[in-house]
Picture 1: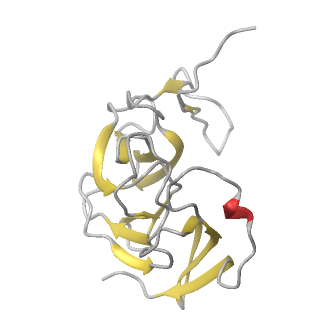
Picture 2 (picture 1 turned 135 degrees about the vertical axis):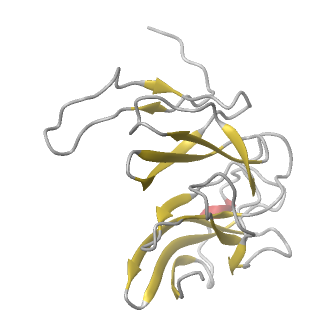
Length: 199
């Protein structure tokens, strides 16, 4: 049995949707070189043939890489301005074509930390993800004490606005998964917000 490292090494498989045939070698490995690798990457097409990947890492921010040829080749992963622990994120493309990311904008408790996981914010890019606007606060629950996590946002675009669905759980203020996040408390559970589109 092949021994594998704990470090996350996302693989990218490229497939045409029309004829389901693979292009290129079909397998790419991305590494950020830190304690967590590039975990749970999200991909979006920001222009015809131009792809953007964002992923959480243990380096204190989300990392990005780009393809200009429909995914056949990729740039080296680079840090973004999205300060974050190794926490979930969601990448989408707004109806006007701009990328938008939903994530927890917060300074990590330490190298490779998974916490804090609040506040939930979003940020928009005007240049296909090369640079990002300032984070916009969506949910600040738990910021003061570090005792909440607002995670795994799902997003849909409707005529009424952006529908954001996410989970809120109890968090251990010192970080780590102690089981406290499984407690059921009044302000936790599935959360939903309908937000206006960014200007």
